[in-house]
Each structure stands twice: as structure tokens, then as C-alpha cells.
Image (cartoon, rainbow, N blue to C red; front, side, top):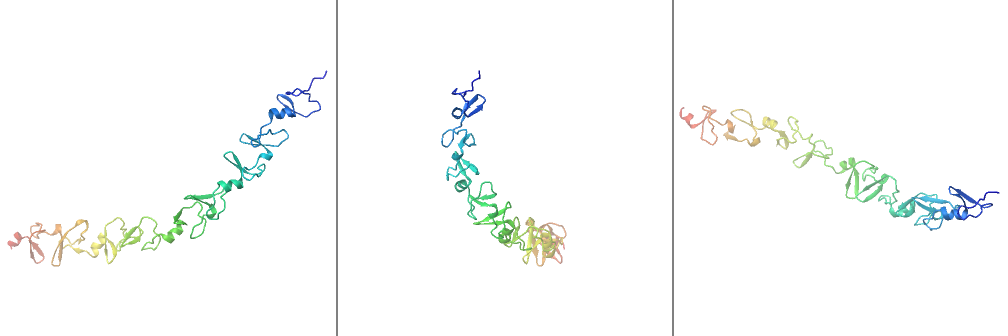
Length: 279
């Protein structure tokens, strides 16, 4: 006798009928679909063995049910995006969720190169310097109200210029007579020593270090012949056309300090009263 060839589920004979073989045995088509077919996530109907089945993240679809949730376009052979539980074609996703370039007003496609600043978005090639009109790209930029500048253009347009070299002064610097200077440009008129952070004075609006000013313009002490500059709280005494540092103003004979005391001039000498009484 010939061994029976029956469906593993309904036990009906499969002779002369289509069937599908699985590990559990052969199944007639109706039983196979009932036991093994996945349910379409969209229409909730079984996806039969003769249907093209599409699969995405544990969800199964008939080919005809795999469509954009907004425009109903088939996604079977199209790129798509999942937003929550919804499948969206790229066009619908971009219209609803993608940013718009503030320069060209076109959608900034997902994955494209873009720049975001202050809540606004640009295509990278649309973000231009307001002066030279070149793409800024990944370089540094400086905003000015509604304009954006690359650093060289901003410096040329807005940065103050050094009084000496006339070049842009972008950081640091020194202010002298309400005018900006590079630190390295602000030097003594006499010896060219940098004056930034140093004591200095001026003569006829020109800056001088203490040493040059003393050598060129300061009064000379009649005792030590060194300049009397007055820097550092220095005080001096003047008499007729002669001048002395406080610590140099002393009796020519006994060397007693004459600051705040009476004295007697004797030709080139100055004498305290005691020494003068011995003459």
C-alpha cells in the first residue's frame, strides 16, 4: 500500500494539490496561510503566500499597504523615513519636519551639509559673508545685526585701525589721546622702547619713556645733575633758576637737609643758617 500524503493541519490529501513544505510537514495553501502568514500592520489582513511581503522594524505589510501616511505614495521602491509610527516619503518628511534655508527658502534635506545659528538654518553653500559674498563654511564668523561676516571682512569693515601702522586692531591694544594703537606700535619717540604697561609721559603730544623724557626735557638737579622727572612721587625744590631733588637739597658744608628750612645762598653754594653764621 502507498503511504498517505496529507496536510499536517487539516489531514486532507495533498495529491494533485499545491502545498508548502515546512519543518512541521506539508501544508495545504489555506492551512499554511492560516498558520504561518504574517498580519499586515496596515490593513490587519493576513499576508498570503502569493503576496509580496515588505518588512520594517518587526512590522509586516502587503506591498500595496506599504505607503506614505501623508500622500499615500507607494514606498515599495522609494526612500522613506519613520516618524513615530508613521512611514513618510522623503518629500512629506521634509515638508513637515525638515528645516528651511533662510537664504534660498528651500528645504534642507536630511543628511545634507548645513549650518545652524541662533535658531536659523542655512545650506552650507548658502551661508555667505555679507561683504565678500563667499561661503563661510566651517570658518569663524562674526554676526552684526542681520549680517554675517568672515573675520577678515569684519576686521576690514569695522575694527579700529592703529594710529601708527593703520592696520586693523582686533584685540588688546593701547589707547593714547583717545586713539587706538597696537601694543607693539606704541613706543617711545626717543628710544623706540615699547611703552605698554610702562610709565611714560608726553612732550608736544609725543610719548616718551621716563629715561628719554628726563634726558631730553626734564630739569637737572643742581646737586647730582640727574633729571628731575617727578615720577614715583618725586618732589623737588626750585630757587631762582636752580632745581634740586628733595634728597639733594642740603647744606653745601654740613650736608644737613634744607627741605622746609631756611637757607642762605652763597654764590653756587646753599648753606644752612648755622654754617652761614660762621662765614
